[in-house]
Amino acid sequence: MPDTWLFRILCLSVLCICGLIFTHVAVSGEVTTVQLPAVALIDQENRSQQLDRLLEGRTVVIDFVFTSCKTSCSILSAIMAQVEKDVRDRLGDDLVLVSLTVDPAHDMPLQLKGYAGRYSTTPHWYWLTGAVPDVKQALRAFNIPVFGKPEDHPPIIMAGNIRTGKWQRWVGIPDPHAVAKAALALAKE
Image (cartoon, rainbow, N blue to C red; front, top):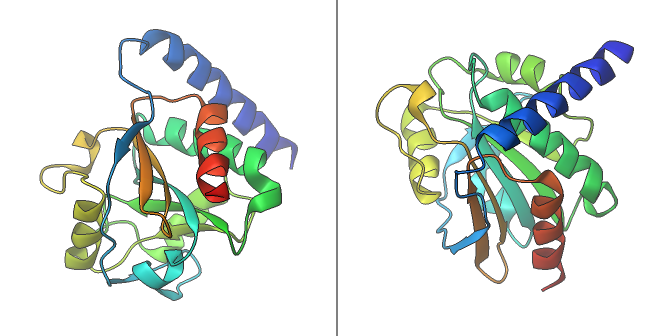
């Protein structure tokens, strides 16, 4: 357990440093739209999850990562871990967290489960992969580029209320507390 906390502290330290370095990146929560596809994905527990049904009627905070990433994915996951901590009391039927792989050819449920173990402490954080065409369809719904190498994907976190259709999108390294605050506000609508 202490190693997990040490790792989180290290990640948050890196996050703070990167926040200072990347201040020129637009990180405000811009308004966007999402049309959820009815695609079957697989979570870290190797359970089938129909994306539109999983998120139906909920508010979601979602990021896009891959387990062999050597750059921004660990920072995004650390941000999500802080968001998880900030919204813990609301997680469940109304609010969930999702990390969707941008490398479905490599990220199988076992890899996602191992990676998730470094960040996630709740069963309400779903780490999703699936068949390459299904993951690509899901990524397109969130306007995430699906061509090229996984390491070329932009660092993006989104929060959205499926019932109202309202979404916010952060490109870059956002303040996790701002993301959590936006998610809680969306959930109240």
